[in-house]
Each structure stands twice: as C-alpha cells, then as structure tokens.
Length: 556
RNA sequence: UGCCCGAUAGUGUAAUGGAAGCACAUGUGACUUUGACUCACAGGGUCCAGGUUCGAACCCUGGUCGGGCAACCA
Picture 1 (spheres, rainbow, N blue to C red):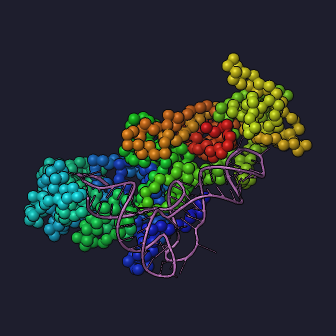
Picture 2: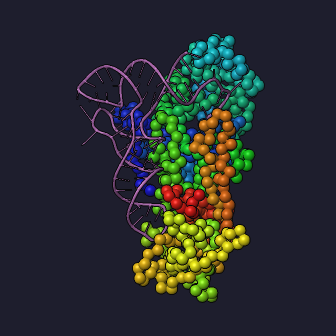
C-alpha cells in the first residue's frame, strides 16, 4: 500500500520534453484553491497531480490561495484547506502564497497594458456588454470607450482604484479582438470595482482583478513552469498566454486535464453546500460527504485517496470512475492494516445450557489472521453470548452455514456448539437459542478432527459493551444523480444512507480512540468517531466487507 | 450556425509506427477458525469510413458521437 506506483501521463510527457529540450531546468507547480469551500475528493486529484508532479521531478509545489474575490471568500476555509492537504500527506514547505500579495504588481501590470494601448476602462454595464460581445456565431462590436487615450484610461483606472466610482460602473478590459471566435478574447474584463473588505488587504482596494488576469500573473511571478487546471479552462489558455506575452514576463505553460467523476457521488461545491444548509447531512465532515474531512471521519485513509488518484491517472477524457474501484482500494488497505475485533450488530441471545452459570474463560484470538506479528488479545467467554440474528435459520437452505437446529458450528476461538432448540415470541420471532457445547473442543477445533461448516463471531453477554454504531451507506440511489435533467439531484438521496443501531462489542473496544480503525469480523470496517467516549463508544461503518457474491445474510 | 477539446473491454487507464496489457467489475472453481482475504481459470475492447506505410489504437482526411465556451465567479 505504501509503495508509490511509478506513473506517467500526458502532462509528464510534456514536462519530459521541456526538460529534454532545455526549455525548463526545474519544475514548479502550484495548487491554487479559492478559500470559499472545503476540499473534496475532486480536489484531491488536483492536489495529487500538482504535488505529485513536483515530487516526481524534485521540484516545488506552491500552495497559493487564490483570494481575488473577497465577496465569496472566507478565512474559515483557509485553515481547513491546509489541514486537509496535510492529511493527504503533502507539504508545501515555505511556499505558501496569496494572490492578494500580488495586488500591487497586478495593478502595475494593468497600467502597463493601458500604456501599451492594450487595455481600457469601459463604462458599459455587464448587461450592455452582452450585446457588444455578440454570440458564438456572430462577431461582437467595439464598445464606445475602446479608443480612449491611454492617459484618459489611466486616469479612469486610477479613479476606479481610489473609489471614485460606484461598484459596477466601470471595468477595465483587455483590448484584444471583438470578432474573435473565442469569446474569451472579446475584450474580457480584467478588473472590476468591488468595494469589499478583503481578509488580507483590508480596505486598501476598491478594485479586484478577475481570474483570467490574476491567475497567469500569479503563476508568472512565482515562476510556475507548468500550471495544471481542469478542462473548462482550455478556452481561457489563449488569454492566459496573451496577457503574459503583452506584459513580456515569464510565461508558465497552462495544461488542462479532466476532473474526477465518481459514480454515486456529487462533487459540485454548490450542491455540497446545499446538503449542509438543508440539513441533509450533519455538516461538511459528515461521513457521507465526499469532502476530505468527511471521508477522514468515515475512516477512509489518505493512502487510499492517493492510490485512487494514481489509479484514475490524468487524461483529457471526461469519464466517470466507478465507486467500486475506490471501495476496493479502501478495503484492500483496511484489510491489510486494521485489527480484527468481534462485534454483534443485530444481537440474539445464545444460552449454552451445559456451561456453568458462574464460570468465565478467557480465550486468545488473533488480532490479524494474516499478520501474526499483530499478536493476540483475550476475549471473555461465559454461558450466555450474543450472536447475529442472521446467523440462525429454522429452515436452513443449502448454502446457509450458520446455526440451525441440530447443526454444530464454531464459536470463533472458543468451542464448537450445537443449537438444540429455540424460543420464539408470539409473532414467531426467535428470541433465544438453546445450545450445548463440547468441552473437548476448546479453542474451536475437535480432537477427533471433525469439521464444521462455519465459524461465527460472538460476544459474551455479561461482558459486552453497548455501542452506538452508525451504518453509513451510499448517499444516492443512482450512479449519476446529476444525470437527470428533469429531476433535482436531491430526489436521488438515499433515505437509508445512515442507520443508527446499538451493537454489542467485545469489551476491549470501549477503549478505542477517535479515528481507530477495526475490522468487525464478518461485518465490515469501522472506526471510532470523534463523538466516541469510553462510556459511550460510537463507531462509524467505513464499508461493509466485500459485497457478497452469493449468500451472505450479514450484508445488505 | 461559430470556436475549442475528447473517443481503447461494463468502468478507469497503459501501449507514443512493430504481439492491445493492467486494475476494478462480472462468471466459474480452490482454499479458509471471517461467506472476508488469498489463489486459479474464463468472457469481454481500439467510434465509423477512407488514406499513408512492409506494418496504424498511434500519422493524415472526412464523418459520427460526447463535453466545454457568450459572470463585473474561479
């Protein structure tokens, strides 16, 4: 799980070529989050690419907050974003930057453009400019202020900066080509008036740069060699290049790749926010959320997230990765790295009638069947046990391996026991199993070598610890909740995505610390929640064991 | 009706002009003191049509299908 898989992709091919040709001698990348939301698994793909590429080429990856829109951003997210990147295991070292640190330079650059006759102040409202911009199929026309003198434009721009105009009355536009087939080249706005308080620059600025103007300059200032972003910015690249060429400054290369899409998952920030605001989930760190904090609380490992990123690779093809692929990676990690424990999630009482009432034995059971070095633990055994309700059937079908009248089964690590009779309530539901054990089978194997078909998990009734167990399942009932144009994605929310039960745990589990992971044998992978205490343990179900191919009554 | 981008088993991804592989998923079987894990085997693919070439998933041309682009968002 820990060994890094050597990978390559079309971006690394570009880098290899740039290194080979001497165009670049070192590699600098950057991850540029806008501090306006929590990071999710889609961001993990970008983080993994940005930081992973820097690692591969012994370069640097900057963490840069793209804080150019004070209206949308909030400092609350800044800390969370850093925590989440660290959790993934990446480190930006000294290279923490802010777009807002470059506002002075950006302003100077804008003035430089104006002086070159490549930018102008435009008094058209956004509504009015729509007409001038034209449509994809028709050329636009030149706005009235387009031929103003540089001197006048500088005056206007300065007045914009100094708060001499109301919000929205002027923008600064790059003067490019109102007939370009690429709409982004039809005199795009590069500065807008927005008299908002900025978390970093306070009230210094009444104008803020637009993404297209800011981002390329940020990259250029930082000496970023390869600026990776998602496909929707492909059509912005000519503008990115135009600005830096006109400014005659260092020119990074923007390279676009496709976003991550996962089945049964919605990653749009806006929709995630809706789930939180409408109380469909308990918060950004709800274990059903695809946020990094949600997944962390669910019990997913950072290694698994990174492995998924490696596996999906980096291409320009916009596909959708099956969630099963991710689940498989997580199970693989958890199977390898989590200790085993016994917990009964839907308990039914077993009474071993030929076992003394006052007796308790301690049995040693392995913590990990494939890793002897993980050692053993002891679990108490007594006359009354809890076992899974689903492990008993009156009329056992051929494939059923659990308790049925007269069949001997193994109680893991303890004895072979046989169910002789059952009690039922008025509705016919089984309430208790009456069994006998074979004292000769201590440890679970018979001296005469006879075999049993199954090994069941159990917990001693008088030693058991009650715990709240939160069984999480997929948040949606369909693969692509966004795929129906008629219906809102929330209509596909899975009503059973959370089931809270009380389970019976082996006593040692009460000491679990928040974040500790276990495999509850034959049930699934669980981790102690942050709400968990020794007195009131709480466990989150990370995943069930692998989905049954045939019959497994314990799994939904 | 404009411009840009993409297309390899069900899904994701390799092969960069020289035997189409891998993982997940699916099916069958073995093993098992977890119906897990592990192991073995099986099925299944280059969007279409031309062209270049001894040879094309890869290069060229034309189509088809899918995605993106007309915030004072990023």
